[in-house]
Image 1 (cartoon, rainbow, N blue to C red):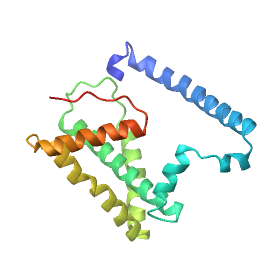
Image 2 (image 1 turned 120 degrees about the horizontal axis):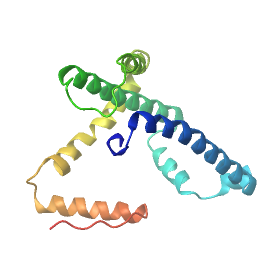
Image 3 (image 1 turned 120 degrees about the vertical axis):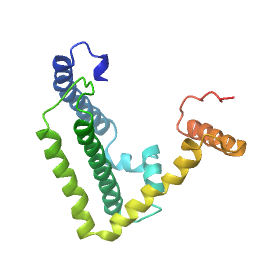
Image 4 (image 1 turned 90 degrees about the vertical axis):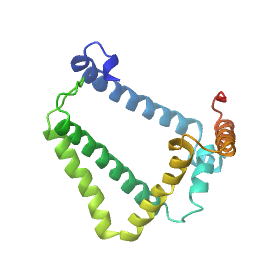
Length: 180
């Protein structure tokens, strides 16, 4: 995104300072509008799509806090990996052109916080962490079969295309073009 800006040092902070309060204000107004139109009992009775998706997620566990623990650990873990890759590139490829180069203190502080958020659950709740790792690792074979492998059987391509079309129809997304 920053390479598309004319003056990223000036434009990006301005965009952040303007967009954050505006988006927060719009979000609060939307919630106020929802509460003005639908009282809480009617909200609970409505059959919203998000409630259906959350209900499907709750099939795996009856405790919403456990789902939050799984997702927060995985999010912190992948953010930690991203910050580590940023620091690695700054160390190994310092001459690489970057639109914005921040002081190294900021990523180091952020890395220490994220590392804390990864290490503490490992110590306190190892079962939940292992479940989160297992759920994340379940996607690795899918990636290798459908993305990484260049020469795969036609039946796998057809399966991938069919699943993509199904998900586009379920989530009302635009139908993609089939690659020949």
